[in-house]
Image (cartoon, rainbow, N blue to C red; front, side, top):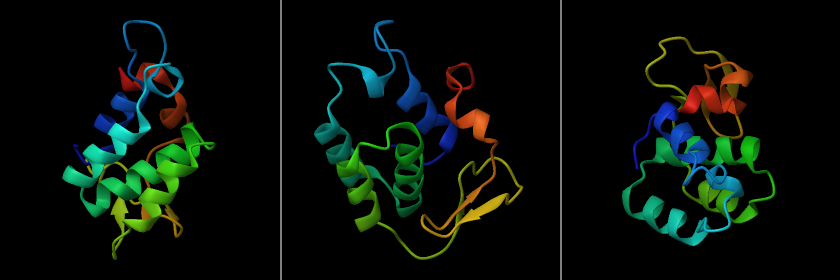
Length: 110
């Protein structure tokens, strides 16, 4: 699992066989997403996954709870490629350095 928000956004918004975004797809597998995350994700990736899940699928309490359990110390940027800090999310120890429209626009994740 890459740690950058652009890659994570692409995964979360990617069209699956043009039938809908991952979060709305009937074949999505939250358990598998969490298994892969546990095997490969850094603390920074968990912060990004938790934050983005709250924004994109707020009802996915299982993902949010797992991300909270894997939080690490220190602050990271939501988009590590953007040198700006942006607004700080103390809940996720994350600098929100992308605009809110970038978080919900599928055209930006393609």
